[in-house]
Length: 98
Image (tube, rainbow, N blue to C red; front, side):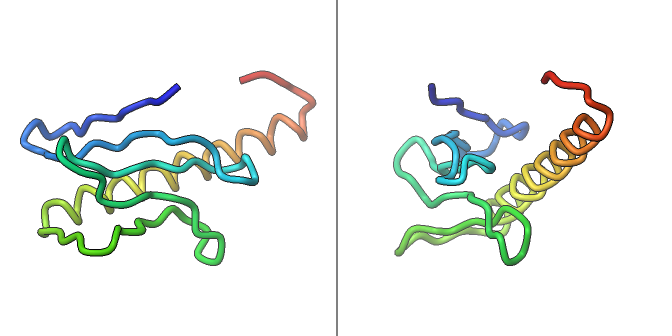
């Protein structure tokens, strides 16, 4: 099932569409797109231990779009880190569930 996260800013032209899990199954992949075309992907970059944006060739972005993409990457990185901490605590205490 595809999940689209619409931006908080109603003036935004960007949508972040969940594409699925990475090959490892540990992280997510998102498409960044407008109503007209895909612009790139947000995916995990292990060497930096954070989500990053990989633009499609030939795309260009203004400062507002870059800020919104940056904020999305940051929010997904924090969400992932929080989930890892929660999973670690559950494993340490023997509590299971979502």
